[in-house]
Image 1 (tube, rainbow, N blue to C red):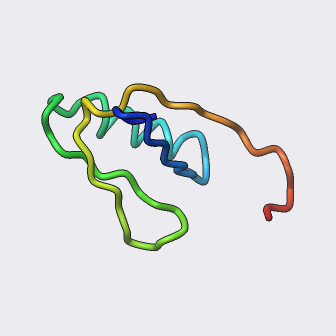
Image 2 (cartoon, rainbow, N blue to C red; image 1 turned 90 degrees about the horizontal axis):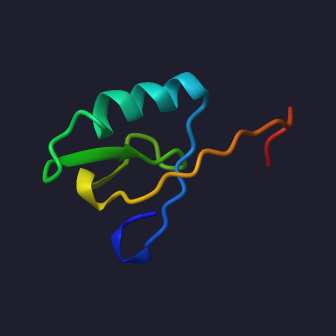
Image 3 (tube, rainbow, N blue to C red; image 1 turned 180 degrees about the vertical axis):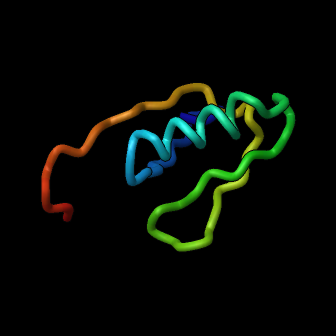
Length: 68
């Protein structure tokens, strides 16, 4: 969840990919720095936002062998 109540769904292929992004980009960036959030459905497209605008992250595993 972002400041102002906006929600953005971002999918990572593995938990390791998420942890690498979260630890390397989001937590190490200065609060006013811009960070790139990869958009899974658009290859090479990113949501660019300030690190301080992220107020909550929900992590949800996918257990199905077939994805819709």
